[in-house]
Image 1 (tube, one colour):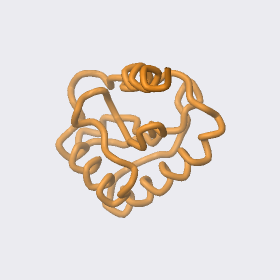
Image 2 (cartoon, helix red, strand yellow; image 1 turned 120 degrees about the vertical axis):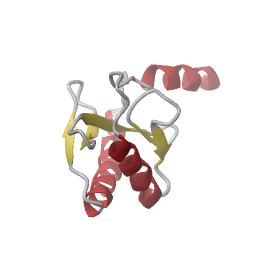
Image 3 (cartoon, helix red, strand yellow; image 1 turned 30 degrees about the vertical axis):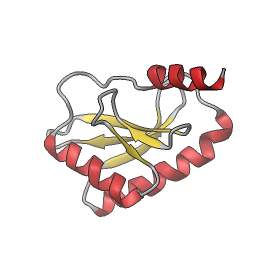
Image 4 (spheres, one colour; image 1 turned 60 degrees about the vertical axis):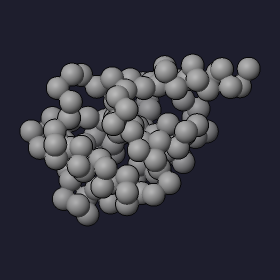
Amino acid sequence: MGKFNEHERPFMDGLLLELRDRLAGRGMTTAHMSDEEGRPCLEVLDRDLRARRVYVYVAFLWFFWGDQQDERTSCYQLDEAAKVIEAAAKAGWHAEGQGDLGPVLQEILDTYQS
C-alpha cells in the first residue's frame, strides 16, 4: 500500500475498530493490528480460515482487502461495509495472494493533485 500519513492513524484506527465491532457482531473472527510497515489493519478470516488484511484508504474513504474491483467498499456506511466484507469472507477470499491497491490509488491521487 505504500506510505501513509501518521497523522491519519487515529482516524484509520477508529474506522477499523468500528468495523471490527460490526464484524464481530456478525460472528466474524477479526484482529486489529499493524502490518509489517506499521499500517493499521484488520485481519479477517474467511470460511477456510485464510486471513486477509483489511485496510483503510483515507483519500477515497474505502476499506479494501485486495486490488480487485470487488475487494473494496465505502467507509461511509459501516454496517453495509461489514455486510460486504462478511459476504466476501463467507464466499472465501480469492485464491490469488492479496493484491495491493495502494500504488494504483496513489497514482490516481498524484495525478489529480498535480
